[in-house]
Length: 285
Image: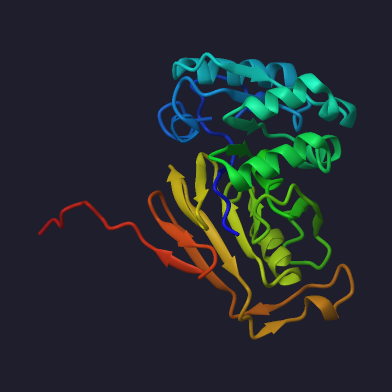
C-alpha cells in the first residue's frame, strides 16, 4: 500500500537565515527546503508541530524553528517538546497531533526520538495519518534518519567499512525500504552507509548532503536543495562478506550500484529506477 502522505527527510544544516556558531547550528533553508515543507503542508495557514525531541537544547531549537517558519508567514505553529514516553500519551499532545498538517523533527540524537515517541500513541497517529491522509512528516539530520525502519544510530567515519563500525536500531518505520544517513558528504559517512546496506542488502541506502532533502510521495522521491544525494543499492552485489566476518574485520563489497543525484532528480523506490532532471541550460558553442 502506497502512503498518501509526504515525507521530507533533510540532510542537516539547512540555512534558516540565522547566524549561529557551528556548535549551536540548529539546522534550515528559508527560500528552498523550508518553504517546500510549508507548501507540501498546505501553505502558510497549515498547522505545524515542531518536535525538538532529538536535541540536547530543545528550547533554543524550538525558538529557532518558530522564527524560521515565521519568516515564511506561518503563524499556526506549536512546539511539542517530548522528553519522555508519558508525554507521548497525554490528551493535549494527542489532540495536537490529530489536528496537525505537518510535524517537523529537529536534529540531534535520533535514538532520543525512538526512545520517547516510538511505539506510543503519538507514533501510531503519525504513522496512520501518513498512510491514509495528506499528512507531512519532515525532519532534519536525526529527524531524517529516524524515518526508516533499520535506523543508523551511530558509527565512526574513521573506521571506514569495518564490520561493526555502524550502529543500527529500530526507527519509526515510516519508509522501511530505505536506510537514511545525514551530513553525508561533510562528515565522510560513505563507509557506515555502505556497511548498513551490506548488512541489509534489500534496502536502499540514502546519503543526504547538508542543505539537501527529499520529497517522498506516491512511492517516489524528488531531490531538492543545494547539495547531492548518494544512493547505494547492494541488491545485486557479487561479493558481500558481511555475514561471514567477525566484528572489527575489514569488509569487501563488489558491484555496489551507486547513483549521485542533484536537485530535481527523481527515484522510483519500488522499481529502483532513476530519472534525471533535464538540463535547462543552453549549450555554449
